Amino acid sequence: MPRSEASQTLFEQHVLPEIEVLLRVARSLTRNDADAEDLVQDTLIRAYRAIDRFDGRHPRAWLLTILRNTNINRNRRQRPELLRDPDGPSGQLNEVVAEDVTDASVEAGFDAEIEKALAELDEPFRRVVELVDIGGLSYAEAAEVLGVPAGTVMSRLHRARTRIRDRLDRAGIAPRSR
Image (cartoon, rainbow, N blue to C red; front, side, top):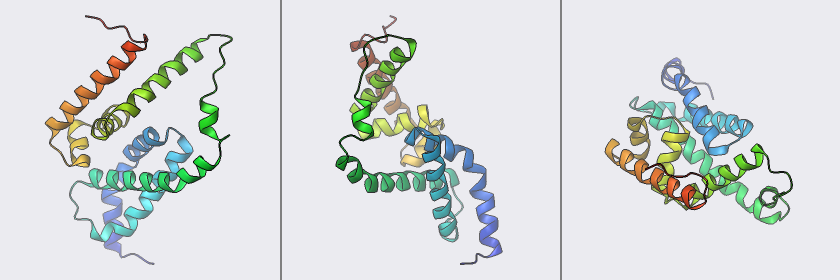
């Protein structure tokens, strides 16, 4: 379906400058460069199709919402396949080799504790960590994406970081300095 020159201009003006941010957030969501690039591509296609309905305000928030919804939809479609394959990636992640303790295994243990701590967070707290700490968004940008005041973002981020730190402390990985 051919687009008007005005639509093309809107896309170039509002969408193209945000590609790096989209990639950064997509990498934090997928933890895989190829999947992140696919997610951004799907997001750009959806944005291109909807550009005529975009009001021009807050393009980053609009695009990140599309990205998030696209990621949720992709995960919903993939979940049944993961559950059917008991020898798939989730089974492989649980295998631990306890022979040679190296920096890599210590780092893997740390990463696993971080993943557990993130998984234990309630959705509002996890989303803020994903957007600000992992995705690199500012408090204001995260507030736009979530539809909450910037103060709420800061409060949720502080509480989430405290809970993650407590989890790491209980695991004996991150001693607290007081």
